[in-house]
Length: 592
Image (cartoon, rainbow, N blue to C red; front, top):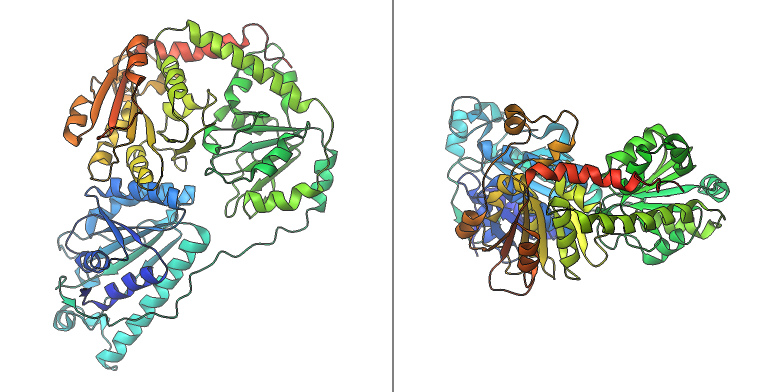
């Protein structure tokens, strides 16, 4: 086995191995050659080659999402590193442990006009858990360093002693970065400068690490719950709101206890991966009709909780945010191991622990409170479900009709990856996820890496994966298909409505050339040529009957991944969606 000859490269590779970080997504380059050699020559590591750094980082997020452990992304120097930024921001807000490693030029070659150099230190600034900027080894390329890097040398110390100081500093910095990576599940950046020659190897490592312990998350004490229990056991209206959470995050017995309490109303979203007969998964179907009701204020007061308990990550629904910001709960408690966003400007207490840890401590002291809060709103939900079926049966072919058909056709056990914008919002209108795990990049809610994330996640999911995406998300991230890791059971459902259809339902919509060009971004692209380029089987549908036909057998095993492009009419989608909420409120059925 070969090892890079540069000590800092050996250090970093050995450190990752000792901590069990075994998955490495590499984008090709020259400056990162010492690390490429170190990772690819060692059979402990599983390495993936993805050219596009932006796609590579989102691919790594998908893997980290499923593995629930750190994944490495490695790039060369210069602007390559900047292409990681969208994924780094997503990882920062979604708590994905992404280990970003960038090779760099020596410090004396920065800002002198040398090629492929930028200021790489602290490049991610406020969207990173920790930035470790390692020092240049002085024992490698000594003549070059002595000639150009005199400021790095101390004439009063022997070169060997100076190298020991460099090695000690680098080890400490790597250790700090790893501490954050493992204990806070945040992305960290390690920037490591190399001087040429870059490709030299040795047959045995000079760096040996044997005393490294894997950093462990510290169990934060939950604290005294007596006051919270006192409020909870007296309140007649408790609302539980659940945002993004991985599948299986809450033990079913605790969900059952919450859901069986008539004073507790549970709102979830598709991305929460929670399902129970006594929850309301389509939040906007409850709130939108109230917004149009003649009894609007009274109905909002009926819905207003005394206590709001929130779990998980970010929430999709803008309507629930607006409602709770206006009709604030008396108490808002949030449970999350690291973060407590004051989304509703009412946060009173943060419990820095997992949902299961909190519920196992809290629920044994809870007493059921009788009342009609839960059942009243569940009956509203049931009426809206019937009305949704009635509405979908009468609308023409459109985004909404297509989503209903597609979600109904999803097999049990598959993983569903949702793109952002219209896709994730349409998904909230339906009762999906009962038999599927559902994921979406909701940290920054960007469309830029949906395909890449889905492909990376599919690598480590035992069952087939289905990506449901819009046209802008899909075409923006075409390079997500530029790799050899797409499994034959990978499926893409592309809803192509010819542009950013979501902007048609937002305020300011105009039927003008400027609107279509700069907001809606109208286009006439289709995905057939993309599929041919990347070896995917292609299907298409542009009518109800064509979609029914295309979905038959679409999820069956095949030798190649498949894409189904659903062409919907852009000029009716917005009207059908907005009319849906009018339909729900048309007969006063928002009343409890």
